[in-house]
Image (cartoon, rainbow, N blue to C red; front, side, top):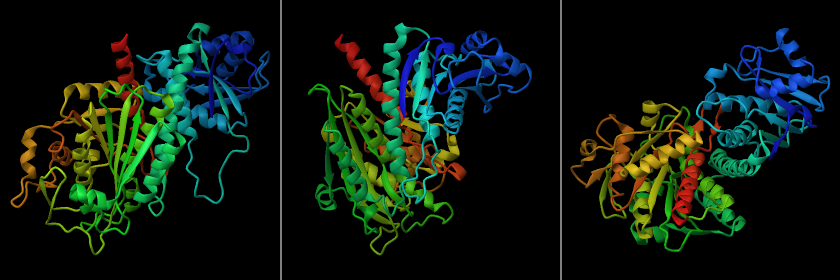
Length: 504
């Protein structure tokens, strides 16, 4: 999809389709009023006749509007103006994109940035428009023999801005949105791939392909022999039951000053999680292919970072494994020595994400990071606690927590801070090792998992994002969401802006 920005009056646009908003109940938005005035009140007459109420999800496609230069006009319901918030704005754009794609118009000029969204400016609306349109049009049909594509798909969106002086800034925001979408869609594609194709070796190949596409990225793949020599026994314990060898995938993006400490993103890459010997229930087990969505989000964020040419040093680290109940699989009760030297009693082989992450987190100490963020579909308990809307956020550094909350607000990719108190740590006590990998009961499961990881992060500023409820959708809309690529990309954009302010 091509996105551009343009200033000008709606009635003067020669376009295949002009998109205008209608508030509930039957009230035109400012741009629609201006267009209606130039067309002799044609739209107002239609609304008074009851053709469109203006409710969310409604739309009306018009042809041959008197005095109009455009071929079509699409009226889109925007709901009640006073209730228009972030979520409803995205819904409006999602519905607009779907309606346009079915209209036969290959191009559309959209006048929805004049909608009054609570506490949001034009630039936010522009970037969200790009993201929402692409979200609505995304399809994963790479493995379908017959593609279900419209006869004349939408190819170009022109977003309106009120004044010419705002064009340069608007173009910048659209570029940000395009890069964000590129990263999100890349993460979705990886997450949606079936596990017979997406295994650790394939995931490593995708990282290498990304580096070939973008020369500012370098990759390094550590094999099981190298990980064993380092002492990454917690990670290797997870892959023992699988015929697929584990990989430790590292990507380096070094476009910041040489003395700048890197920001490190660590993504859980369990390409399929059967639970191992602690086998999961069969129902919904197909969705365990999404257990590598943390890894996908790291690759997606790095793609966005490269396309934005951010002047930062960023490292992506992905411990990639498959968790299977083979004859060599780790058993409940086994004890392993992690890369940190701490010993772990594995009471549940389905609590495998923390085992691969703990070794990866110890590994990043050598890079002396500015901050480390791990991203993992870690616990079903996080879904119980928070549902499927925000990511669970845990951190040992309040300024990092605040920076992620700020990025979440700006991007619309929400987080919710969870406690990381020492009171919970005793739940991991073991009679036979330094710690167990799970508690003896189900209380506070997401917190206990984060407390486990915290034991390996005492030498740097760290945040943990539990994305178990947000990485994919279930039911009819089943598929990867690409989250939290928007959050992570915004966090890095903010760090780049912070650096520019310090240099000024």
